[in-house]
Amino acid sequence: MNILISPNFGWKLRPATCIFGVIILMLQACSVTPATGTPAPVMPDQALPSALQEDDICPVTPIQTDFWEKVGPVAGQFPVWISSKGQMYYSKLGPKVLPSTAGTLQFIEGRTTKALVFVDKRVEGDLVITGRQLDGKGKIYFPGEASLVTPVNTTTLQLVKVPPDTKVIPSAHISTHFPEPPGKAHHGMGPLYLAPGCYQFTATIAEHTVEIVIDIIDDTGVHDQSLLDMTADQQDKTDGG
Image 1 (cartoon, rainbow, N blue to C red):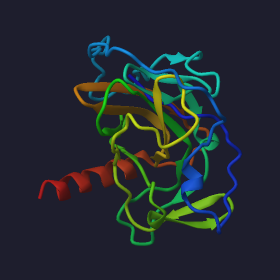
Image 2 (image 1 turned 45 degrees about the vertical axis):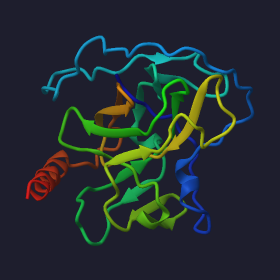
Image 3 (image 1 turned 180 degrees about the horizontal axis):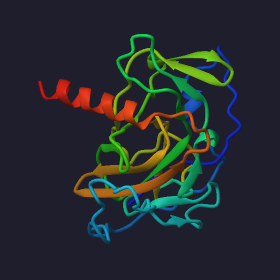
């Protein structure tokens, strides 16, 4: 299944503000209803392709508009959901992100955005999230630590070093954000995309795996997919020894 990010949040950065404010969306108060019983693991309706061909349509995960009145639409299934609108214009995601001067991760202009993750409290454990590009070799990164990015101006960040390509939320059945939707734990997530494309999030907790796909549409025309693919190949060689 597929993950998505919310629309234009009107990003404005302040140099004195903690970088976490760039990634985390705070919500208003809501009551919590205790959850009972644990549904069996749900298998995806159909396997997602390992890669899309040139004319393939991005298999966007259907969104749910009635998940919680405090947030917009989400995508996913038991026990993990991510805030998503299915499709999003690249320029509307959030702050621009520039590569580090070290040049270890080559791209032209990335974008980070606010996203929320919801976990059913009946499933306990650490949540592990990764993301990959289905129509290219790109990855989704998670620069959640302030030491990984630095503000350039009110609308732009710059990487200090390569951020992790895995997001781990320990004890994800316990909320780090409040209020909570009934029976769900609530967390912030700030994914970084290095280019537009069709992206798949994979979220795993306990014996459950949920796949969420979103489509980020290029409305800027400044990207070079071959540069991202070359960088991915170099990283694969490094990881392989």
